[in-house]
Length: 136
Length: 418
Image 1 (cartoon, chains in turn blue, purple):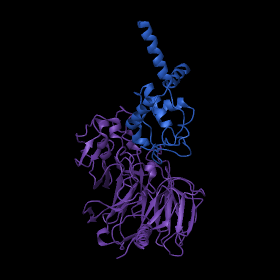
Image 2 (image 1 turned 90 degrees about the vertical axis):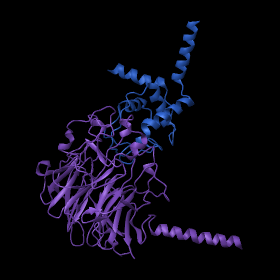
Image 3 (image 1 turned 30 degrees about the vertical axis):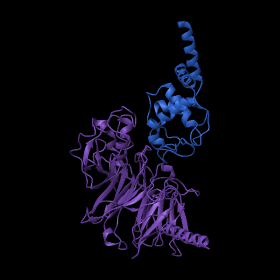
Image 4 (image 1 turned 120 degrees about the vertical axis):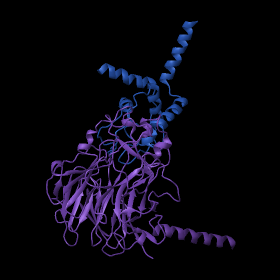
């Protein structure tokens, strides 16, 4: 019987790692509110010259998920033009966020405001980390 | 018949208020004051300066559509609106200052000067003279705002490239560096000779230290001293959530005005000024807990204002046009906050502090509001929605007050008539 429970449990876990539910978006929104909103603002618009906007950001809705995961985990302080503009504040790291947290907040911001990109699964976030370990 | 009367009445009321709003460039001002748009959409206009002939110079932080970053605006037909607009220069930056026929302008790492003729036309647009160069620019707090003291000295803000001098800027858990090494070349005001060329750090002097970032500064000719406005630190709640709530972060620390004398230390990063306790409080990065005091050797502010409003310009009024109350008082352009989120933002207005005998003689008040484009008392929530953000101040030869906006580049002219 235990064997079946473990099997069912694994299927559910794998399922949740490959799916993004409405619940996940709610969790993502909560992370946004507590961690990201202070700088990126309630409308995802950022602050001119200081904090990059998320709404309409070509990087955010793009396919380089690995880059987004790294930025959320490690912060960001490079002098790089984002859609033609420079922003002067360093972005705070979030080293304590789990893979689920990162997946959920990415799913939330990629589908909020004017953004219509794909959601990000936990499996995808995990794959980024595995790649990173491999390339070391 | 009644319906048409109502429609007519409504029409007139609407038109009157529309005309009122338009005739004040949508600004809310005290009685007797009027505002007009001297210019519109000239670009990211940071600081401004005006000649004795009323020709206005604006420093843009980004090139306009014609690639220029110093714009010259003249109202040739004297209708209150600039009709001859030319420009030159291609470097970013904030500072601009006019003394006689010499126009000083700063990039984010250097200060230049240009010679003007008697018609305020620039003689050497392509070959500015470098006054100072090599000033540190690491993106954050990069404005090299400038002012002169009338005795041949130029004062330059070199903002700290840091929020609170943490080992890792804006990283949770990162401690404050002790001592803060940033202070030896930034986080203060540097004094140079305005008439010498090609100066570097070693040719100048650190005039004052412990100032996180001063975008607005002015030489007060009554007290013969330098006054500055400091942008206080951000994110107390982000890094110390057990010490500061969102609401507390929104109100801490104060934005502060200081009267500086050589050698003064305003206390950053070790302390911040708490406008409620009215004390210098030890920063949490240095072991503070919101209550412990610090900065025994640091000066106190002359005036303090609500947190995060971003004072970008300071001007002591020396004209005769405004009523007596405003003579020798201080106007401050508050660019507007971002770090109050999720609470509503503050600022986006020009404030005024009355002065008598060189000291504040009353509480600060909002002088001109409505730059954000919002009506009534509605507060800005998201900074990108602010239509205009006050950034620079200048006093015209007739005593009018000019305000620049670095969002789209409106230049407002505020005048008083009895």
